[in-house]
Image (cartoon, rainbow, N blue to C red; front, side):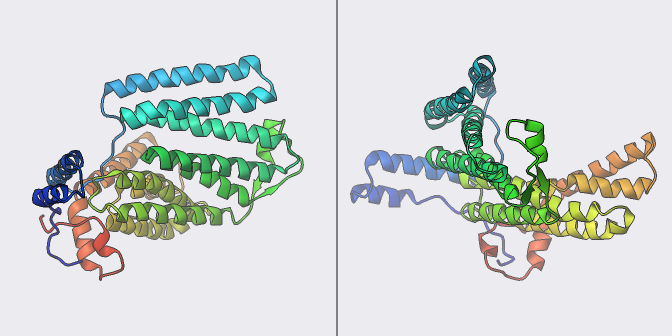
Amino acid sequence: MADAPQGAPQGMDPADIRAAAKAGILTEAQAAELNALSNRRADDRAARTREDEPFEFFKGFAEIFVAIGLAILLGGIALLLGVIGGVGILIAIPAIIAAISWWMARFFTLRWRMNLPSMVLVGAYSGGIYVSALTMLGQSDMGLKAVAFLSAAIAAGATALWFRRFKLPFAMFILGGFAMMATYALFTRYNPGGSFDDIDGWAQSFVPRANLTLASVVFGLAAFAGAMSFDLADPHRTGRHSATAFWLHLLAAGALVNAVAGNIWGQGGGANIVPTILVLAAFALVALVIDRRSFLTAGIVYIAAIIYWAVAGDRGASARDWALILILLGLFFTILGTWWIPLRRRVMRALPDFPGKSRLPPYSERT
């Protein structure tokens, strides 16, 4: 990528769109919609005077109102699980909730484009599929490890169908969560003392292996690769690909930071402070290159731990120490957030060309 600023790409030439309509390639209605979309995307890019990481949870209070109503409605249906009981009900009712959520999404997601209600619906849908599959598989002769893996894999596959149908970015976060559960299930060993009917015994039957960190690394790298595939498809971050990548980056960063920095810090004391700093610095560099603040946010706990050790050392922190720790942590993120753009610009200019650099979010020469 050259040092010259990369301006936002211009919208499609209206003359080309009109020519396509005259040639019969597009209908008049399609040409009008395409022209409106092109203008809207160009306006969005022009409005972004500062490089940012777009994020939308809801558009207005109406979405909050509807989301609360949906949560109460679906919660009331789920309450039937406790009232009626029985294994058959535990299989049927969650599946019914999933079917109802899919049906409702045709209106709230496809027709009315409501983000927060759609998030509630995909959560209820995927959760229903998972509970139903978990209960049904639990009645078989499979081992607990197979039950844990298959139920999570089924829920992930069902959520993939949801994402394909409704194109909801948050659905990828749910899908990734179940994929992470399935990955972790592969890196556990089964203790025959557990019983599926005994929830506590069932949970304790999964004893992590020493290489469980590997599961986090494998999943984290896979999630990061998926996130980057969406990011590279939308470098100017004006469409849903970027929003989808945001949720995958949250999962990837959480898994990778906890696997690497957490493993180092967990070995104890100030002896590991330098390796932890180096790891977090590497994550910060990656976050700057890909222009994802959310990627670095996953390391906030370890950054706080480093500041804690620097202030309090091996002794317990006093109230005054905690005040200083919070001030330093707040200053770190405030300064980094304020000067993110010039920091990223310097980093990108210093780095040599590498595959995909030109497809990353553009960096400006403006100070």
